[in-house]
Length: 408
Image 1 (tube, helix red, strand yellow):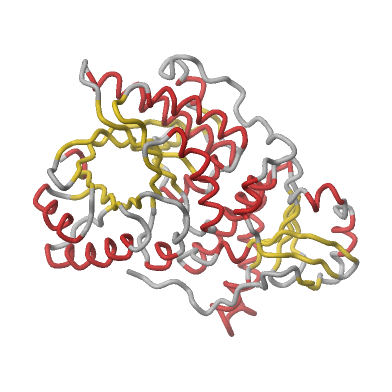
Image 2 (tube, rainbow, N blue to C red):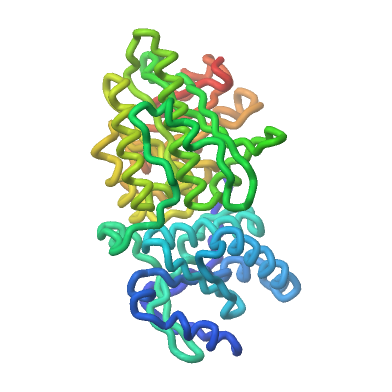
């Protein structure tokens, strides 16, 4: 398991001045509005982690970092917001039409893409998003986010409506309302969902199904990677999540054939849960899915790498009333990513097993991953395991559930 970047010194927790580069003062002055600042709509993303890791190479590579960051922000912010580099390591980002949590979650997503591109991991992303609290000529004040406290209070204004169609009473009939769709970057995307059996390891009994989402670019049928899906716009991710649930419910109805399953694991993106609009839509869909199973739905929150534990705790509290359990899904299993989830309120952690390992390698990987996960959550779900024969190994190491790769 790879270790997190541990040389990056996070910005101070308290509000502190940050010097603005010459020439940027006039650009920022027009955003010196109390409503924008107090509403959490003005933020910074800091590239200090990249600067620290690059060390002496920073001077030679900083323009490359700036160009890539600007492309990420241009794609994410779009025409509804504003961004500008205001210092050697800070980008100023304004989302006037997003609520506080949704805007800050978007900034977190942008920084994760930059860190993954240049450093190969994003465990320090949460330390690099700051809320601007005061603007003055030549300087600004920014503080580290306290998303836990901010998520407890409702945004004073609603998020923009990213989805034009309401959820129909029949989720399968409403599927064409969510997919295919044209994404913010101009690509046409479609969403499919399959059902993967999930087994409880104690008696190796099937407890239900887990929805597997796939996002495909058309024409060409090229599937987006999990990282590419995570970097879609907030509105696009909401469409993906809603289409996944609608498709999954339709699959479950066809699969049941008169036999009601115990539970259904439903994937939801953290960014979608940070949106007021997303929360309202999900409640409708979760209730529809819950009516089809005996015990209830299990919510699997995706794209959680780099999310502060307090913010994740707030998100889990929003879906807990409609869920049997709340699971956090990790795209990459590292000690840093797992340890950061301490205090996040998750009942379980889920991650995929690596493919192609020999028995000894699989035992070594499983022992490290499951051991770290058990310190954070009571249950551990290991997905896409290559064979039934490895169930006993996983159970002996503390895993509680598993699914098989390709339905084996």
